[in-house]
Image 1 (cartoon, one colour):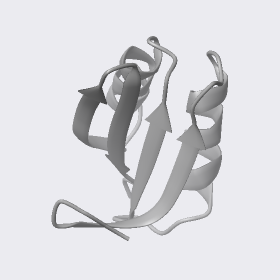
Image 2: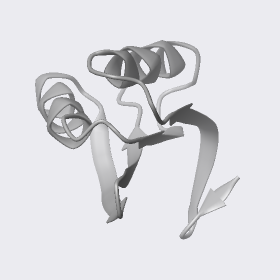
Image 3: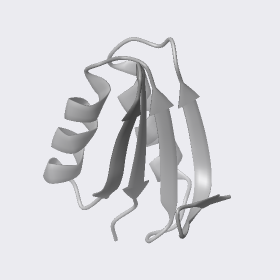
Image 4: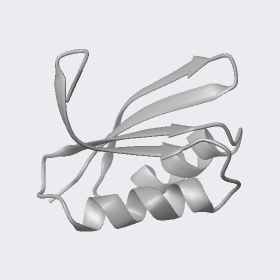
Amino acid sequence: MDDGGVTVKAAIDARGLACPMPLMKLRQALMVIAAGEVVRLVATDPQTPDDVGEFCLATPHELLDQRRDGEVFSLLVRKGG
């Protein structure tokens, strides 16, 4: 899967899920991919961008991109080593 020049290894559709489920699904996906690979998370919970941003600051993972289209948030996270 390609997302703006970034190859996405895993995609998570967490639309309709409330906090903390989108972040929990992201964490699960990061556990099964290799360092340097990217996960795309799509969610509708307005808390998700803040949760993912704080998670990335507290871990070696990197928030590559964050976009909003109406009520849908799309985030790209690279797994740290």
